[in-house]
Structures are given as structure tokens and as C-alpha cells.
Amino acid sequence: MTVQRTFSIIKPDATARNLTGGVNAVIEAAGLRIVAQKRIRMTRQQAETFYAVHKERPFFGELVDFMISGPVVVQVLEGENAILRYREVMGATNPENAAEGTIRKKFAKSVGENSVHGSDAVETAALEIAQFFSGNEIVG
Image (cartoon, rainbow, N blue to C red; front, side):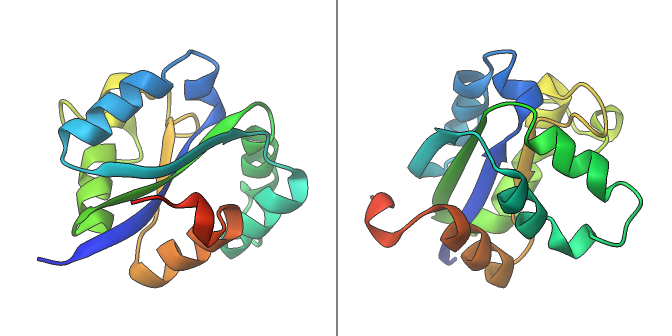
């Protein structure tokens, strides 16, 4: 097993409902450590950069608008195979298809307001972490 770091965002739909603690409890119960965390208001430029891979998709503008609509909590998580583990803990994008006990099953409102984001690969995690955290902000 490999200890990895992954990136997480608790999205505006979840922060608006004061679910940060609940989401963090699920993360920690899954054996992942939160080694960096901060609540921010994402700028339009940050959101457009973060979701640039979706720039040509029809939902890009709506996604950016949603992500800047309220505070988010950005996090660095650490643990054994953290990327895959967190994706399992998040659950399916559509909360109706998410497994019981997952973050999205417990907290998501819809496919669009699905409460959390998690990195999908080692390379993506490194880029996403670097966009929001400097090295001295990550304390493992």
C-alpha cells in the first residue's frame, strides 16, 4: 500500500448547510487524515482554472457559477491509497446511485449539488493541491 495525498473540496451546497464537520467525520472514519484545510471564497479565475478540463462542455459556465456562489472548504487528505479511497468515500456523482454511507448518499442534493470533489489521479491531485496550498500549509 502507498501513502498518498489527494485533494478535496467541500462544495457550496454543503458549506451552506453547515455540513463541513459531518463530511470531515466521514473522511476521518474512512481512515484518511486531513493534513490541510481552509475555508475560502473561490474566485471566478480560480474556478475556471480548476475546471479548465471541462471548458468546452455545455455545463462549464454553470459549474463555475456554482463553485463561486458561496464558500468552499479546500483540503488535502492523506492515507493509504488516498485517491481511490476518497473516491470510494465520496460515492457516485449522482447521489441516487451512491452507496449507503458515502458522503454523496448522506449529504448531496443532486448531481450538480453533489457536496464534494476529489482528485481522480496522482497527477491531478498534485496540480489541484498546488493550486490552493503552499508547502508550509500542509502539515502531516
